[in-house]
Length: 377
Image (cartoon, rainbow, N blue to C red):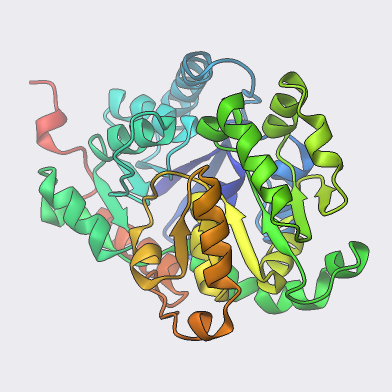
């Protein structure tokens, strides 16, 4: 079976790393890894391949500049050329980026089955480009891999057939558990930044709805400064550009803000594990925080990872100053933190094994085909 995996962004490299490793172990599978180039910075992509012990991509399209439409359009054109040449038995996409939807559309147009990792997630907010990407990809996929029963129920409610869905758990849990000891032994980030365990908060902030809107970005940054607590902030290039454009640079010069460039996976896991609170607008980090048993504040108005809210490991605060302060108050209360249910709803660290075996099984049974309702008669 020839599988073509499409990646493009930093979180996808993490999600797909254990899948790639597992495929490479299978004698009956051949892997082609196509990187769209969506994340092209050394610390946003290349370092992840070496740290996660996976080979560099076979193909890099180097598509990383332009509007959403320009990016998806360029990717569609180039991915189609690769698919027409390689003729894979299935295309594997992950998550909800422009690379995901471009890969899904290019494949289905050529009647190549699409496997979608992280199917069924919904924020129910069309202001998020990710919501559009994930919904469309789900409804053109042949095999929809879900991380939880919530995601499975969502797909069933949208009319997806039960036998197209495979619930496994989350491959990001696999990666965290497999690399936690390596991060402790190999990362020197705590020493480099002169940090001690649980003496700092960790911040990530990059989503379009937060950083492209000055009226939202400015109050978030001001509130974080007013927390009067040491905050480590590996700043995303997108956010840095917007802060400069909006003339908000002064907010990053506060003595409590420790700025770094984007970090490699091992350094970032080490920072997460040792933070007292994580503040983020990332989806993946909400799950990693739960896996590492670190309280999380999500700087968004909604989240697709509803299990984290239900268990109390995560609190939605949006850009609301009062909510941020209240949530920090909750998570700095040891008695309240001790009562949190840290049971991981996203699996046991073996999801990637189950996924690859299921894909190969379906292929051998002749079930890895484009559903007939997509076929042109």
